Amino acid sequence: MTATDTTLRAADAVFVAEQAVGRARRVVEELQTTVTSALRVLDDAELDSAKARLTDRGDFYLEAAGEHLGRLQTRCNDIPELTRELLGHLNRASESLIEARGFLDLADTSDPVVAGDVAQLKPRIAIVGEMVTLAKPVAQLAAQHVDRARRASQDVTTPALLEPVTLDRSIRTAGKELGRADEDVRFLGDVVDHAATSARQSAAIAAEISDNARRRMSEHGRDPVTSAAAPAAGSPAR
Image 1 (cartoon, rainbow, N blue to C red):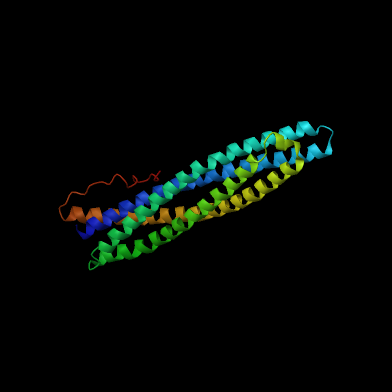
Image 2: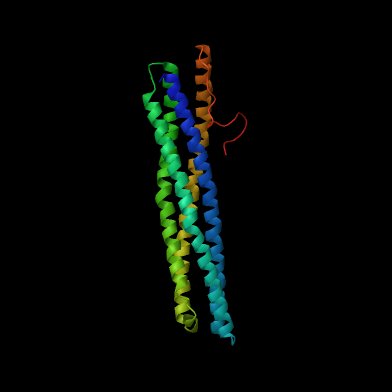
């Protein structure tokens, strides 16, 4: 494998990582929307629980609060699948970044042009890798908090609705856990946004390196093969 081949393959791996991080970012947005919706449902449950104590229509409002907690369970049940999808994209990004670093390590840096390419790209993909590594445990922690909120809402069975203390305790527990999940997902969004920005910058550098490598191949009489992973000129990676 020539020095040009290794830089081309490294660039291809960076393109794949950039696409995976972009998909991860979209899943984080879905997570945030779902957690925000769950918090609104919990607010509705808390309001109806308060009305049950303060009005003469206690049974009606207790039943309404129980229905809200049922909706909360539905929202919470969506989180594990989103988390699995997110971790899948993050793992794909990690694998591609490791692959890119491996190819860059194999590059013949005795060629000053290749050495410059490697020196330019390595720090960028290192930043992306750090952000991706940080995002994984944060995503898992958010999912744990949501699961605890779901379990708290499940404590409210039909007989439990006759006990406002049990209902209030479940609402408070679910609210505490969802609040923590909301903080986690907001932090996760910041981390993945940073990773996505760095990944786009890395992909731009990789595209320039790829163009230079193909030009060198053409000058030496080799037929450059267009990579399927590289984004077309003028169009963003999806």
